[in-house]
Amino acid sequence: MRMFSKIVGSIKQGVLVGVVLSWGGALANADHDLLDARQTRIGRAAQTARQAREQAGIEPGKLPIGVFDSGTGGLAVLEAILTIDAFDNRTGQPLPSGDGQPDLAGQAFIYLADQANMPYGNYPNVGRQPFLEDLIIQDVHFLLGNCYYPDEHGPPVHDKLPVRAVVIACNTATAYGKHHIDQLVEASGLNVPVVGVVDAGVRGALDRFADGRSGTIGVLATRATVLADAYPQGIAVEFDRRGWDRRQQRIDVVQQGSLGLAGAIDGAEEFIIHNASSHQPRDDYQGPSFDHPLAPIDPEILPRYALDFRNHGVLFDGPANRPTTLQLNSVMNYLRYDLVTLLETVRRSPDPQPVRAIILACTHFPYLQDAFEQQLQQLFDYQEDGQYIYRDLIAQPVAWIDPAYYTARKLVVRMIDQQQLALNQCPTTSADRTRADFYITVPCRTCPQIELTTQGHFTFDYKYSPDRPSPAGDYRAIPLRLDHLDQESSDRLRQQSPSVWTLLTDFQQIR
Image (cartoon, rainbow, N blue to C red; front, side, top):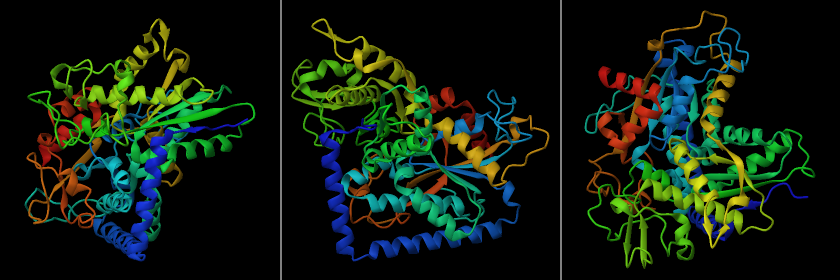
C-alpha cells in the first residue's frame, strides 16, 4: 500500500518543468559563473562573520539571536520564540507545562524583514531561483555582520552586534536557502545554530498521526515552497525516522501553492490595492484570475469560493454573478480561493482521504488561522442541490499546524545542545531584560537603474528582472520604524503578537 500521494495537480507539474528548464538553461549559458559567484558570496559573508565576531568584543553567549523573513510574517515566529515555555530553565529538561518562565527570557534578538524583495515565493515561478538563493545568503550576511544603514539616505555604520544563532522564519527561504546557510556557517568556523521552519512543521503535522490513522495532510504554502517539494519530502523522511509502517498507514500530502496571499497580507501592490476607488480590473495585477496559467479561478465553481465583492474586494468586468474578468483584491478573498483550491485538489484525486491536518506553511498565514478555521467550517457545511461537496473530505476536527511553536522549541534544544544557554541559574523574572532590534530593507533610491511604484516599492517587472543587479546593490537594511507598517499590519501585531509589539515600540524609543 502506498504511503504518500503527492497530489499537487497538473498546474504545479507544469510550473516545475518550466522553472527547471529555465534555471538549467541559465546555468548552461553562464558556464558555471553563477556557482563561482555564489561561492565567492558565501566566502565573503563567512569572512564578515568572523571579523564581526572578533570586533564585537563580548562573550558569544551575550550576542543576540537572529531571525529573518521576507517581510513581517516572521514576527509570528519571533513571538513564539519570545513566549515558549516548554523546558526547565535550570536544567534544560523538557517540561510539558513549562516552569512559568519563558525559555529564552533575558535574551537579545535581531529581526530582519526583507520587505524590499518580498514575497520570496514568486522568484522560482519566474525562473529567478538563483537570485532568491542569493537574497537569502545576503540576509544571513547581514545578521552575522555588523553593518546597517541608519536611514534611507545616510552612509552605513558598523556598530550592529552579530548574531550567535539564525532562525529562518520563512518556509520558502528554508526550502531554498538552508543548505547555503549551513555552508556559510561552516565556512565561518563559528558555532552558529541554524533552525528552519520546514522540519518543525513536518514534525508538528505527523504528531497528529501518531495514533496510526490514515488521512491527508494539507500544505498551504507559497508556490515556491510547493515547487521545492520540501514538505512532502520532509514528511516522508520523518515518517520513516519514526519507524511507522507504511503498509498499515497511508498519509497523502496535498499542497496548495498560494500566489498572492502572503503578498496581500504585506500589501504588495501587484496583488492588492487598498482603498480601491472602483471595481474596474487593473493591468498590473499578478494574482489569481480566470486565465492565470499558474493560479486559475474556475468560473464553473465560482459560488464555492464565496468571494466577497463588498468594498471592491473583487475587481471585475461584466455582471457580478457572471463576471467576464475577475481579480482578487482582499486578503480574505485570497484565503477563500486557496482553501477551496486545496479541497478541490483533494476531491478530484483518486481515492481521496479526509484532511486531518493543515500546515500553515507560510509565516504570514498563522495570523489568519481563525479565518481559515471559519472558512473551512463553511465549506464543511456547503451544499449544492442538497449534496455536501466537501464534508467527506474534512475530518472533525482538523488540526491546524503553525510551525512557529515547533521552530521555537527546536531553537531552544539546539542552543542547549550547543551550550548557548546558561542553565542551573535562577530564572529571570523581569521581561524588561529581553530586548530586540528590528530592521527592514528598502529600495536604495540613489541607484539610477531602479524602477519604483508610486508607493516607493520596486515594480514587479524590475524586482524579478533577469537584468537586476546582484543582491544588496539596490536596497539597504535600515532600522524598522512603525510608519513602515500599514495600519492593518500594526493592528495585527498589537493584537496577535503582543510580546513583539512591546519590544518593537521599545525599539522606537531608543532609536
